[in-house]
Amino acid sequence: MSKKLEIRVVDTNLVSEPGLCSDLKHERPHICYNEYNYIDKALLCKTVDINNISDVVACLIRYIGMNGLENIVCDINEFNKNFAPAKEMTIGDIEKELGYKIKIVGKVKEEK
Image (cartoon, rainbow, N blue to C red; front, top):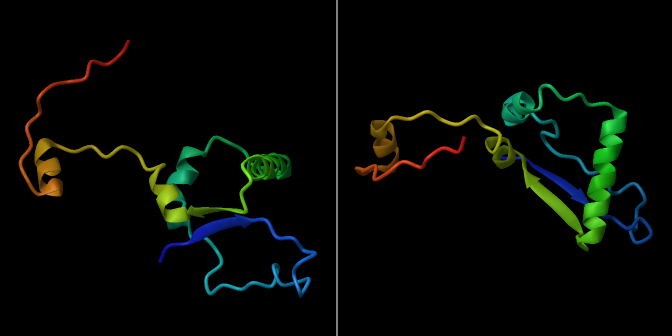
């Protein structure tokens, strides 16, 4: 089951019940470690405290405002996959994954 992080703008003047937004309940509201493990490992050396969180929230508010967005939705599992370490594979592994033979035609020269 995939979970999404949703950050949205709600005009509390237009919500019929003041507590409506904070009263939303979900079956499994917590994020399990295996759903953010790669993110955790990539950010291991960074510290988080209330000041960092306030800065991040301020950046999100600014981004939402500057771009005229109503919400930002992030698929947590997909976002976590973006932080996964590179997978080492042989040509045989790649062919098995793709389901057909491949031919390496050249190398990209690494910049020094």
